[in-house]
Image (cartoon, rainbow, N blue to C red; front, side, top):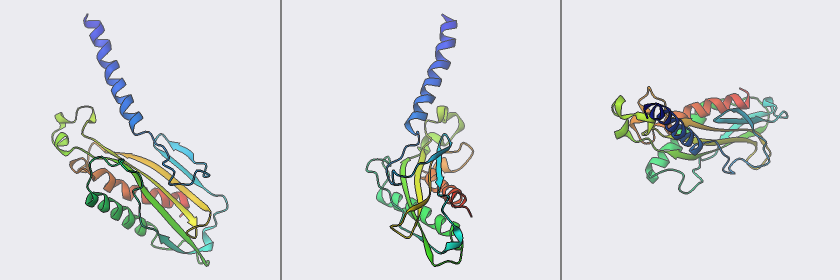
Length: 195
């Protein structure tokens, strides 16, 4: 009887972790045009860069308003919380792309969306013993792409789901993971674009 219990408990824990991972598996919402063939960088990150992108052609960068396109993909967050998350991602993108990559007469336009947020549950994350199986942890997902002008062809694209990190203060805020991830996403997308 004890041997069965010893085997069943770890198997059940593994199954729960597997289900949690499936829940946040990266998937496209269609914000990035479906014609873009993303490559898998890792389990939670996909990206693509056009071989035709020549940064020297782009003397101006425009960041469009960040979107939150999917209804029901943000837990119980308020309109103000979502607006704050959009504002932070917009600010981080503006910082990352503050300087145009080239001197040409073309405009590189950045389109960004926060496509999902599973809010953290701060009350479950106060003490280490309350963080069993990370049940109070959340995640946030984004899709970002750059185009040649607002309606031109896509030149680079990036999708990522970011988990709440264990040793951080982000878990003490419902939107902490999305706020922290915004800077990571902006930096990572800048590298995808190539500067």
